[in-house]
Image (cartoon, rainbow, N blue to C red; front, top):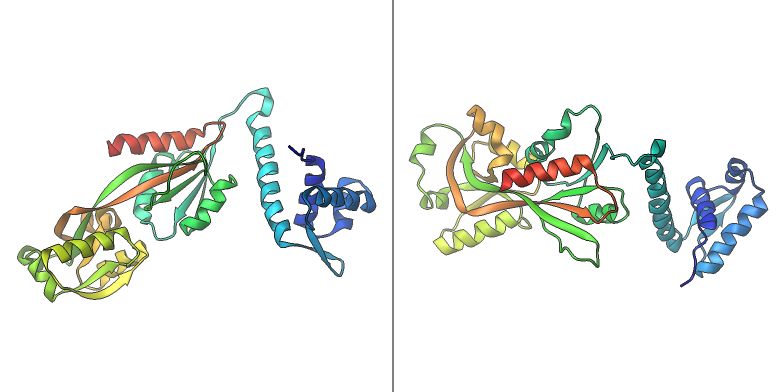
Length: 296
């Protein structure tokens, strides 16, 4: 197997971030020609050009961007290693980087993170994006955990672990009052314009199957992927909405909304997706253990 020269890779990493040979040469206290030579050797070893020149500025090629991602992961992990071994003792990391699927319920996220939110020694970083974008960040160790309502396959090939951490009931909610008492399920749905999760949602798929089994045709008032937006529409529109109970937990508690029907056959599952790593993250262990106890 070819040996990778990490000294050359480090020089590439510095230049890729700065985009300028002269400035990096000054920072590293080496000559510009020596710096260029080291990067050229890395390019020869990899068999690809990593930069193109535009005037005095160096731009990464397509393969250069790929190499930069690996370099970022390698040297960021090196920095993490130094912080772990600070003062000669292995320290438990007190930072937690959480990726959350953008459409996920904010209430669920807060409930999951509540055991560590007020801990003064823990630095919490939360990033929202699509599941695919978050998985790429997790693979290069820029995230510690992803919260998702979609599962991924756990295996040794992709070095990911997916575990179910919660299951929430789905219900039909609407304005409080006599309408909730008089509501007949499922027949009254035929005359109702419903607020529903979007077509890509597993909840929506389950609901459509249930309505098909019951022979109920319904009208769609709105289809919403974002649970936070669905919560606002349920609260302010006066219409009936199909939502996980956790999404509208505050409105139900305060009497702003009322449960018209619990849909026992429909649930939303929540997952924690992590990458295999060589050390434990204490804050993450606390959250997973807490959610596991609640779930069981």
